[in-house]
Image (cartoon, rainbow, N blue to C red):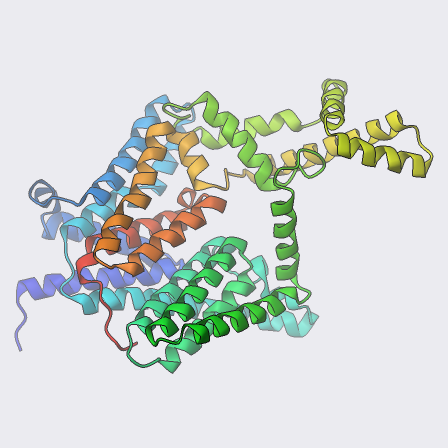
Length: 463
């Protein structure tokens, strides 16, 4: 059996994509090597630069390239040039991957499936590795928290590992939905990955997983004309998840923290120092001052952290800040009534009690602001981060990238791609995923892969 140059080229392209997919899932250096080799292959052996002029990239990938170029353009009005250079290199997959994947096509749907499945199984592998690595700590301490949140992960932030796990679940869901018979092995793997999402305790990913699983069960049994059975199984599943979350653990603590944040989201009093609420409020202030073109790729984080400095209490500003805080409290009549009752119970004058209470709030805000600055926090929201960095044009491009393809995917019944975009859209609400290499590579690679190959995206019936 002889192989043509075209066959060898196609297989090499496929192998490099497999390497990148596995490397992204495991967050090991091979994906970076894979991207470099893929770029060299595309440039020299596939005549990539010539193909750009002859091949019409679809709108979504062209806009993704334009999105990156606008980041590059913002370099010229950035003050922090060194940071800007590093950030542009970090975001370079947003340019490289859509150009490559938009001008080279996979040979068939099996290659497409294998790339996705390689990611799903690699995600399962890294989760198991983390679990077994945590076992010795458990046996020595008998502390269940070694299996939760940041204690469980090894080489990436829990938000990213949770995102990757959710995507692997989505891949396996879609394959199983296309099977005429339920694949028991797939269901077992999905159940294991669902458990890992709970252990990783990333709140947004847990909500996304619950939504995906509920849709899966209801749709699966709807196709069998057993909608009530689907609703029953979904209810049982939600009850099981509820029991797991309610068990004393780091997961339960983060669940209660989430409920508190949601219930207090409009509170301007003692809960105002909640991390994301602080960051998002000041993010809006940064945006207001740089609404057209943004701060520039190098300055967005610095501008945010500079805003946080105003909450740091020092001897020169203490009295002025205290007066402002007291005035804020006095505008809240219910809170004043509550504080007045507490003052009487403790036998303290109301004004003295109010002043001490306001001072405690200031000190909490000050401590949290110092922590944000020390940890170099970003915006914890990709939409706000993009808006602050490259202004209204940049956020418009990002919204186009995420939402424009949905209409076409609905028309072509590419529901897998729709759920992938939904996963990204929701994940961007609570994290700035495009500010780290893991998030940039994942988004640029799979967005480009799914959009460029959407016409061959039907899965085989086997796993």
